[in-house]
Image (cartoon, rainbow, N blue to C red; front, side, top):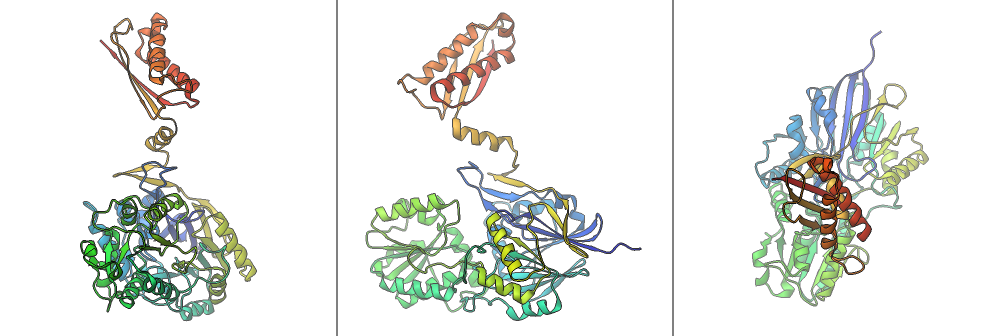
Length: 556
């Protein structure tokens, strides 16, 4: 009897966390499967926990091994957490990439801004179109989100249809782009959906996400009421919000000045793809100072507190072209991503100190989420009526609440999975049948590091307890030829008694060398280890922390 094809799913990033999305679908028998990848994203490094790390990416060692069976990478939309890892990781896969026009154009602009990027071809798919990739027929279904051309993917196979929602919400008035295609989703439900792999970001929030149109109305009211200069910061990719700012500026007699490279890039792509059609051309930052205070609005990068972004520099009075003064207004038309609260707070405090009025979503409807709240999740479930629901794109609480809601809505089965869990979707009962290699890669400058990288581990320790560098010159007998050279990095200058720690460590090094047995004196490795132990013990005694210590011995 011939064994039937098996449809499988695994998340290699984007479950148990928000960001770094990578999902894969497999179809075939046993180990002979064709694979389809959906999205390849990043999340941004956290200086507190990952000092020096710019980006965190999913580990793709499994796909590297299977790349001859990888039929393609399909993008749901062009947010960094869904396509930000492609430039770094695609050269390891070299698979075809498929995206709609705006996503492809924004990716091309992103590549153009990099230094010596690889040449990565992207095949453009029409919104609402269907492509055949090996045994997978992939249909792009328009959904509303906070960036143009977001799509859910209906993945049609011989085993059944899976709906991969991507990021979505229900917004009947999204300002730009198409609303979520309820009609097509209901049709899919009528035809039968084996599994729904769904966005869980707002699964803990009751009600519905407000519309972009409501935000646009608020921004217009605030801009009309402002007496001085206005600056608006938002996610650069939220083209609907950029258009809302432009419309508000038009209604209040202001010119829009774009400040920040990421914002300039998105504006250019949005114009090229028709999403800012009819909107008056924006001005560059050079023009900012030429307009009266009540005739200008600065559209700025930096909504997440990025230290070199435009708004951070403005808050530090460090921007060469844009300044704000007492009586001016800054609108944070964004949500602070968890982990960025401190850096955003620093900017807000800097602006308030300058006398600037800061407006956030805490007091005004100046931002709405691009993700579905619980009533919207209920709608999606009622339209699609899946046999199985697997929550993704969320932390543990979000996944749990999404699964719980699905059960209450009558979904026959839900599964909460971990990164690397290989799930059989069908035929037969769904279950975790294997564990695939998964993990994280760190972008450290120009280098991709494994999460167990020595550099990352040591940097964490350095950030906590500093480092002592000791260099000594000794004779062949192991006697000191000159005074030891010390460099204590990140270690306090004095102990609690006010004594210089440098002097204390110097004495410890000299005494350690002089009191070593003759045999250890003649062994540079043994001497270095003795000094290292003595210095760490000394610093711990006087500071309370065990520092790193590196000892270099030169025999002369």
